[in-house]
Length: 157
Image 1: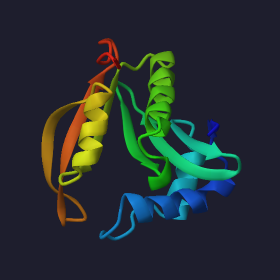
Image 2 (image 1 turned 180 degrees about the vertical axis):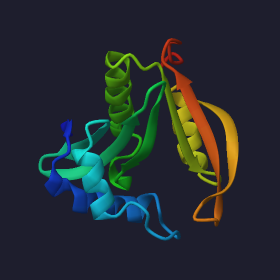
Image 3 (image 1 turned 30 degrees about the vertical axis):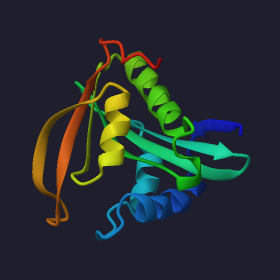
Image 4 (image 1 turned 45 degrees about the vertical axis):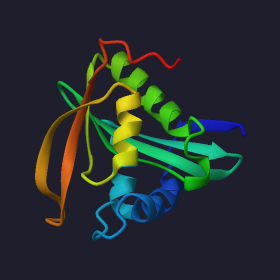
């Protein structure tokens, strides 16, 4: 498996929106439409990153850079590629970009019941910092997590 990370292009918006619908927004009204993803791709304050195995998109991430922190809006990896380092590679690339931009805090939300995502982010050094009631379309609570990039992540031994 040879995964290549690259910045998304406008043509990637359809695939990213479909992956979001399938792997992130399942059971919720779709918020990350092709149009919204396209706006993020064209937004100079966002990084939309894809992970490809040959020409197939197997993962993506969208992060917005704000004044005092970055916000990881979305991250998804195709199930066949999970636990193979693809998600971690996407996050490491975005963390490096944040440091380069002089931003040292990354925040994100995840669905309250998504224990796999919580464990993934904790493994990368993210900590739960709060909760938001009915965050997802008024239907589901969110866990808020953050990572201080000035602190080394846990050892991967």
